[in-house]
Length: 340
Image (cartoon, rainbow, N blue to C red):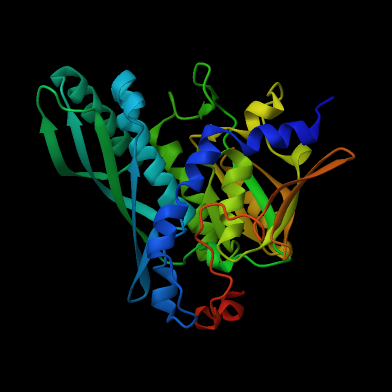
């Protein structure tokens, strides 16, 4: 039997969780202290998976990913692919569709740099993106580094500013995959036709445009609980989730699955009445989606496993990324008018 207290203690102190807390440094500099902002200013705040810039009747989305140098050094093709794929997930989590990427890389090995670009190009072809160029530095003695930026468009925005008590929390993961070696990375793209990859991603913007989702976060290297914490932190909400309700492979170790970084995985909030349609939309694309909890106003992320209960994090006592705006007046977002 899994000891929930010990499990939560372990998950709280993973390297990925510690790295997310380092975001508090830029949050202290660029986070908003103002109480009154326009709709356009609110959606452009840092803290979501992308920034969202209002452009007439739609939003221009912009994001960037920097890859770990050791990853770029050891697996250049996969690092190139992953940099694009992680960005695509960020655009999708905002209810958007990705359009183009640019990159900046430094390397000292010509063959490895070629593999890096080949991985990016393959991912762009698979996801239907324009690889629009970037910055290259290839010279003896260079460090190994890669950053990829992406742009996209959303007609109806999913934002963590929309998270509020009473909303259902759902988790969707493509379980038709496998672990990458001994890592926490779950790959569900190898051998999958491009049309299927794109169709599965399009579920979120379609649900957003139908106003069946409120907010979303892709499940990142912070795992399920860390990613959920970022979803809640923006508005200072809390939640209680049932770990046994998560979609997961039948033989998955719970500790490993809670740290999963899936190629396709999202946490979402939605209204209770919309849950059947949301689950059906994912099921139609072969993606498992389950409701795992409910948002509340406590500021604490609690979990349960059978009869065991435990607190993972309390945002009133301890910030996570630091991008939290419960003090802001969200009236300009007209959230009540966004209901259908």
